[in-house]
Length: 315
Image (cartoon, rainbow, N blue to C red; front, side, top):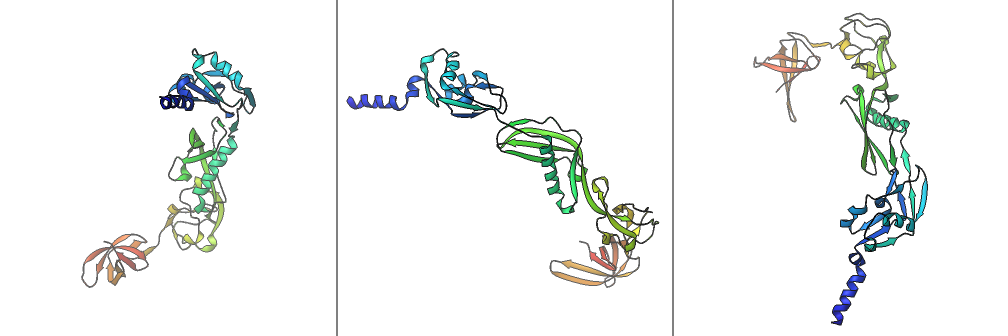
């Protein structure tokens, strides 16, 4: 019998919240980002099943943004008791003084612009651009966030980043998404491109002294050449003016195989490579697929032009 009574006393001693019904445990330091302070901001309510009853109880206005105020737990207790009926069922624990800070991290437009430009630089790194930037049309209203670790995820609207006309900036605070900003604008990427040093007529073959490089915003250009060596020796499909940027559409690839020319046909499968002579039935440029007659078997076989007088058998 004594052992039974002792067990009951021990149970009630170890779990007083079950006897008293609810425990409100005041926190010592609190950081908020709302205008009004609730009980859930300043205290832990146990058991959890009963916390919903008082969690949203509004106490009083939070301190001003960037300010900190401390309150005696007796003051907070008075606000709670004023709102509950069964006052005797609450057990009070925790700090005697609760300090509340209304601290915010304000993300300026410059910080968001910087985050976009950093991501743009990473994406366009292979171009070795001298300067890149996303020229923002109108920056949305800049939000404020509770103190914490702020991270940005930048998503460009077009797979070809140079053509992007808007970006999505997802802002996370302590791993939680707080904002998804849609920002309109356009990309600027300044890279040396090839342009003509003189006027050249259609059909002209470009020589080294007829081109040079100059820094231009390639986001405003379509397929410009960046390497002068890629245009030298190529034929113009149309006339170009002095200081005009030379693009892929301006050049005509040279004919590497003429019709009825004897060419080398290469058959490659894995590490095995066989070559024989063939007669080209069509003329072709680099990459063109033409019909070639095998001079041994007289079979006509599709082949891809891979160099002057060289073709690769297509499977």
